[in-house]
Length: 99
Image 1: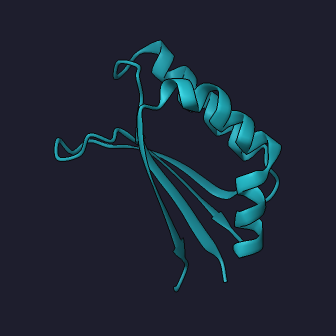
Image 2: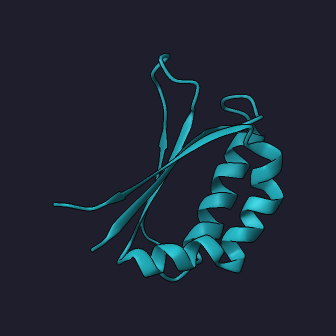
């Protein structure tokens, strides 16, 4: 059963800034370098009803791949470096894909 991992988050950077664009591109490049990350999507929030401004979504073939992603050195490096410093707020949602 495939898994969809989604995280919504806000950044410390101003909307539309070069720093914001750099973080998004760096994170996308970093995460998609992990072989089993599939269907990686970046979305930008436009609703004033949410404080989260960005969303990353990706799919894994199964629970084992998702668990391997969570401990993958590249993912851990992302979390411990720029993510920890530049993401003040985030929410993670993980789903089993049903259709």
